[in-house]
Image 1 (cartoon, rainbow, N blue to C red):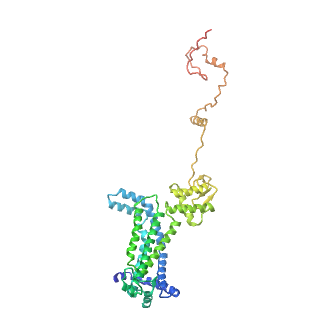
Image 2: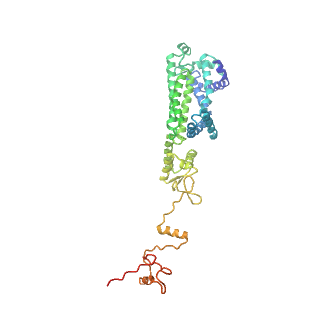
Image 3: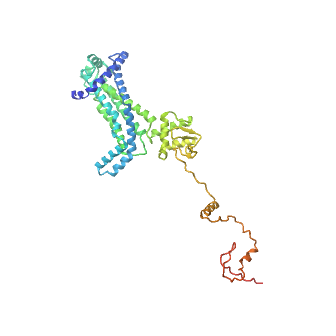
Length: 426
């Protein structure tokens, strides 16, 4: 144990110094030897650490989104090289490199706060054993050993015996009841946080092994917290319960305001955004404009929730623009460009549907293309007099029947030599 403590000695001193500074503030309010002063000092330490880790949390969100986007490609690689594990690993690493994604980025907040967790554990363990550590001197050590949180000493554990608990001025029943309640709350908060992520903020249109893995972790993590929690001092349980509650609230904020595309959380967010935009006829803030801008840029690649959002704006006489704003009085699919050309909501020229032509217009167009005279479209008879037809049918004088040029067939007659009519019987 001393060897492990020496490995974290570079951080136990800063952690103990931060706790002492917070204790000096809360001690003036609640008293230096109370559990409130020491307990709130640990809670304040957690809040300070988590505020410093917000940039890593943002990076974790981006990495998780990127991993979800790569799931279809990862599945194809697994199916293609299912018999060659080495080639499969190489292709996976190539995919991560090309997309700029790091699978370990989603674990950064946990990895970053691990040194603080172990440092706090050793500080509290030194208090339980009566040893000074960091900036905690003998007077602060005596004050910390007197501090109780709802009857349980700050340095007591669930597995401690009755004699050790009695040395800290408490009873075994109080310690086990308090630690058991805190362990259950710690495991329940972890389970709810993971379940909230799986049920609300996951793209349900893509079924991948990543989702199955997350479902498994939803049940594994609470069990791990329950097993290891019985060996944690009460102060460490306060630390871990506080950080779980912080993670749960932080995740609820992200899911509500920046949900994963295709998830149930996105459907709820777009419904709220739709009501606000249709009521005020505009978007508010950079966040809403960024969401609308991303939806417009997707074009035909929009998911079901995004298409419903655009269609609802169209029915309300509003149009989402490429810069994330909303315009009134035009259709979402009939936005004019700078030159007056009809444009789609994504900024592409709208395809014009040609007008349907009549039969006579189509025939006229074909005749013009062939260079022939336009055909007559009138259904009336020829303007020639009726008595001119027989004379035109007679051959010219001096010409033999069947010789020379054939007379042109009149309207209603067949081409070629005509068969003479039989004389009428009188």
